[in-house]
Length: 405
Image (cartoon, rainbow, N blue to C red; front, side, top):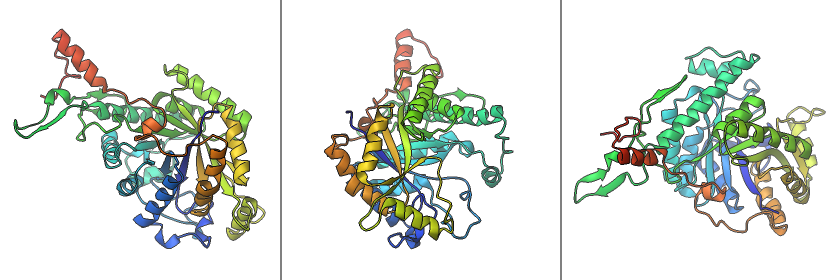
């Protein structure tokens, strides 16, 4: 079988709301750089593909419950802090497209790609909660029960990604000369206006950050519904989905492939990762028992913790069985959500990874340098480089592809 890709979704003390009360949790350090560095280093020690870091423009939905962790650090800034202290693992912070300008977002991720030497990505997120709109104060929240209004948010996110991609392309790879003897730092004919004008953004460009090491950092998106599948098909390299079982996984993969075809992309161009919450067995306590204990600690005894993603409890062998079986449905990787940190992350690296390796389903070392290479994604050329070459050949002076001179 084809080896799997494995990512970790990092959020606070873990995805169970009572995780911060576990004996091994570090609630006093949640807002320290050291906490995040340690988690990502642990994931890197397990040879995982990348980590994602959650973010939002408001507190979580249970924000008024004092029993739960409140507050978070900025995801992009956290990733930039972690980057120089790690070597191989990919770093994919969340960015909320609805409330950020693509120029700012693009230069931040390009910077992360430089700082990490080609390991950056972004998880594009659409915001629809009224509290997030209120915190920004620029727009009226849409009625998400209205499919058209919801669709506008996803169309805006697609334009957001398109602007970012064009800005990443706006410097050709060899635009920087750095020739002190001649006094030429750049070749200005290789730095381009993007002149993007759409329904949501008008961006002149070029970026202030040169072309990132990967050319295009990896774009990801979480998708549950048709609008989100279409956004992923139009704009993303990876889509995170939430199937309940293997049959559901096959159905969702089919929907993504249909959307991919409608978007004019090649079948399979978008990598499909399944999200799963995991409570893995630990010495002296099963995953199921730990889940029940956390539910009781959260005051929800009798009401099990629920998630938008399927929840797996059990041994590493059981979880490995599920991961292997869903591969037949077209799933190319998994984004595991540790129920409690560091316990479930430690169990993934210490137990699940060796189990997958013994089955030939996971790497035994990092072989690639960049995140795109690890995911089997080509490094795309700058779209403006080929356009500029054509312009030079024909003698045209098209503004949108010419240099900034």
